[in-house]
Length: 433
Ligand code: URA
Ligand code: CA
Image (cartoon, rainbow, N blue to C red; front, side):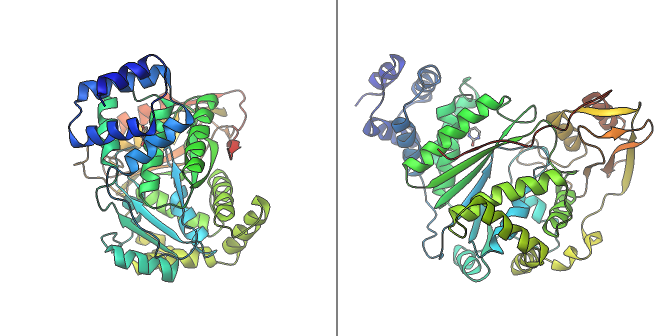
């Protein structure tokens, strides 16, 4: 086989065979196929697309390029959840203990990543003593006993994806549905998921800005998962404004605690119940989404969900008393209000830019080496569709710096108050095939 022939084949709009795709991915991972040929192929895929069979073959070739986590010693259906990323997205922190409270095994591998705030692990580390540096054996034991554990990234997962993603980043080929879908799915499958629930975000704070694009990506991922024997479902949810009220690591942890107690923001609660219901059905703990939702509400109402969260924290060295006394979480030195300049209705809160404002406070990382400040961030008091009076606070800034003028300006530039506005839809679609 010659790489040049496969590039030409794809350029001319033909489908590659599974053997050809495997040859390409193996060769590129080993360094036998050079970057210039791989980038040429990525561009051909960008224009010519891939068939469902090609997408599944590409995904599995990337899965097989490195280590795969073996979760077979954990009883039950391991359901993983993935979000394509948003601002103030606290859903994993709530969902994990919530579904574990229904005896669904949650075996989560998480990274730190870059972004407006830290990742799930950073947020959890706002709890004194909590750590994810546990052995794989300990991880599996914890999941079997308590149904929930989180481990830091271990092993050499999907090296092909890492290499191809870095190449796409500098060759104008990131925005390709077959390449994005196979990239995301390969990572979930290598991490050992039996079933996968996807939260595909749409809006100005999301990767896929229109509902149509988000839907195309969701369909592509659901098809790949189902084709390779991992039952997969997706929802399309809104990211035109931040999710919930807290944006920042400790602030989001606090929000997760509130939500597990049934006292969380309305949108976060609704999203968690929608995603959670899908996880419960995939794990075969309920026949229908309606039945699943009732069960989830039950463990919130009877306290089992928040108890599960405490067990999880203390199992991994964390001080679980923060659940009853959130003042033990890292707290910023200063708070500042952002008063509305006029009366009216909030009509726009540009999610992405508000995320950048929290990053300016130190809540997120720009490069892998950056330290993050777990205490800082924003707490919104108003969301799109809410009435506001002139002078009333739109949000509170939690900072460890005295000068927040630039942050305030960024926020004012990205929050609009008009005469009227409607609360945006939260969930656009549920996709099961
Ligand atoms: N996220 C990924 O993991 N891969 C992509 O290709 C795009 C976004
Ligand atoms: Ca939030």
